[in-house]
Amino acid sequence: MPGWKSITIFAAITAALGVATVRGYHEEPEAAVPFDASLQMTSAVKAILTRSCADCHAVTNHLPWYAHIPPASWMVESDIARAKKAVNLTDWSHTTGKTPGLAMGSLAAMCADVQSGRMPDKKYLWMHPDAKLSPAEVDTFCGWTAQEMVGARKRK
Image 1 (cartoon, rainbow, N blue to C red):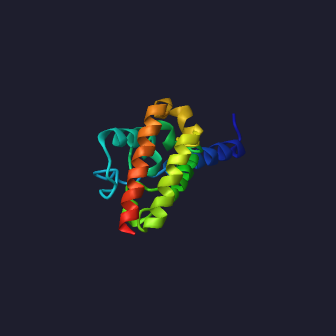
Image 2 (cartoon, one colour; image 1 turned 90 degrees about the horizontal axis):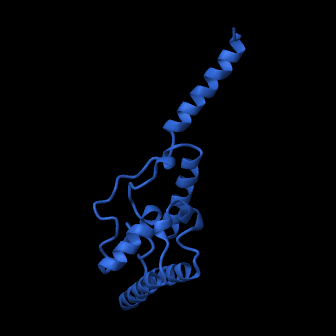
Image 3 (spheres, rainbow, N blue to C red; image 1 turned 90 degrees about the vertical axis):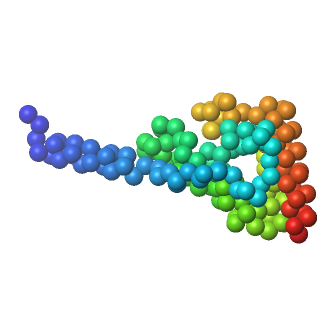
């Protein structure tokens, strides 16, 4: 028969795990349109952004099951917060796209990151292999960023 010490330790561990699970990643309410209206894009670009970028760089609720279970939820939360701090496609006109210079720099960096294979992130691709961009999609994406840079330059 287990002693009180064993029962107390078991109860404490069970309670801690329960609290950790409840305190897992809390999603933001999904935006009706995940991309800021100021971003002009074709359906091809929208499909690329939705498939390969939006989970981290826009407000969506398309998180996998493991994003709700600690410690994976903590890693997902941290990655998403860092990604949105860099580029938030839902709130573009109020954050990254607020000033033309910042928008142009971010758009150039986005293209460079995709061309170099830095984005989508390797950790993300490991769990979402369909997010990998083909060379044609990289060209389409970078063509879009170039067009957006021209638009930002005109607003300068």
